[in-house]
Image 1: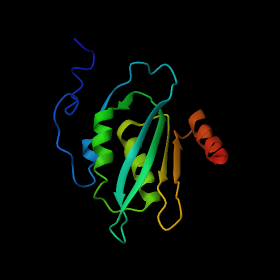
Image 2 (image 1 turned 90 degrees about the vertical axis):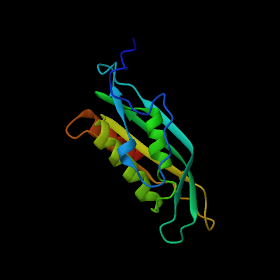
Image 3 (image 1 turned 135 degrees about the horizontal axis):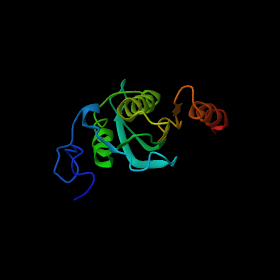
Image 4 (image 1 turned 60 degrees about the vertical axis):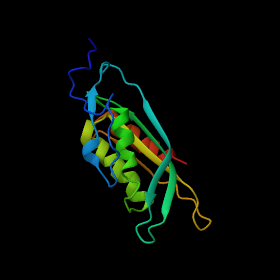
Length: 152
């Protein structure tokens, strides 16, 4: 019996319909089996899609999410469904990146997290918003300041 069978994950291993609008409620977590260690978890979503809130035209990006977990971790299928829910959601690039980061902080309270969006050029300009967070009053807050200061 898997140690994760009793964690209440609803989407893993089952057919789940894709949501058509922003849906943070689809996000699920599971228990970190190694909370005593610091380690990075990185997700790469090369096919992120959202809509321009002004024109309604599609915007495409590669999203990178990296975090250092504490007690809870985001389940990858639920993350995929959540990111897909932006497909018909109208928001600016910077807002998407910050919304995703804030939703993940609320969901799993990581020690550290960063989200970068590499948006495809529109009108000849690329936008690459970056947001990060380190838990206040800890070494991870210092890490956030350091990584933000040296971010290119």
